[in-house]
Image (cartoon, rainbow, N blue to C red; front, side, top):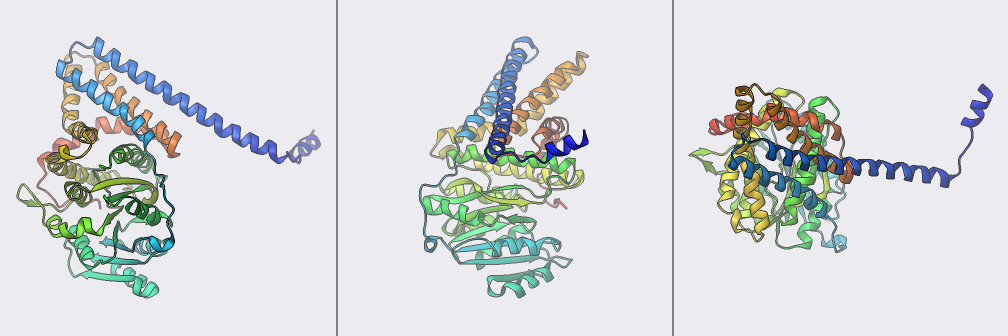
Length: 446
């Protein structure tokens, strides 16, 4: 028997059989994923119909709002499907614009050298300069920057602040020193793919109206623990659905600080105004990326997303770090959402404007709706109502995660239902607190 088993193991199948088997395996996987996607979408539609028709406790306003939100979220799928990052022109190496990379860092000694290396060693056909700003670090960040300058010589320009002045001040200092045609901002814990700059630059070359390009950043430490796994699928949905949708109308509302590119003419004239921005009389020291994107959009430049311009970033590994990050982001959402609402209606696409205003209501009205449902569930001793409310979030989140798995090969997509529960039971309540503490600007991720 053992001889027979060994003989079978030693049989070499023809190459065409192996290729056919691999092809069928991949196709079967896609068919199964697509079937799951259609099934989930069907369940969501049936769920909404059942919820609206059977729950008389919901007011007409919330019924209407629920229908609008559902239609908006479902519409993100065909929008994201329509998005394409294909360029129509092939460019000669001599045509690519020169690039200034700006990296602001504080206490990032562990990873700043690698960040600089991925930028300097990019497979980019034109000139690259890297301006790194040490924002009053108390560790060996400055020493690591100097080590990079010693290795790469004139390609590295090091700026050192004796005391911490804030990321906006550091970024503005970098912009003032930069003289190349495209400015690329990279977070000190983010790492670029070799061809990321090239893909981002081609958007500026193809369309002279493009003022900013959002790169496609995923989680570097995606499999470190359950929290980073949840963040990895959160990032995938944020970039490959929401930013892809906004890019269809050249109106991406946030070019993330982890990796984004700007045309020099789009930000040089406004950098001082951006640096000194205030809100309710308090200087805005967080949300630098969403704020800078708003300034560019207000100046009537197009802002797009480049799926092929890829990078990774280190996500928070503890709940405490993650909570602070999300709170800071929500404060930025409030401030820049209000300011963006003053001009987004002027954008050339009415659909882009409408999407912005509908999306902007989620963090504000979502907690109110959740409280109404929770109070009703407690008052009627019917917890099933709140569980049904959570089910809607789980279904929608799972549909999004299956989509990015199917079309963008996203990892950890099966974690999304757990993240949806985490969001609706915990994170959703951050927004009221963020609004109440909007003037407190001292919280950071670490």
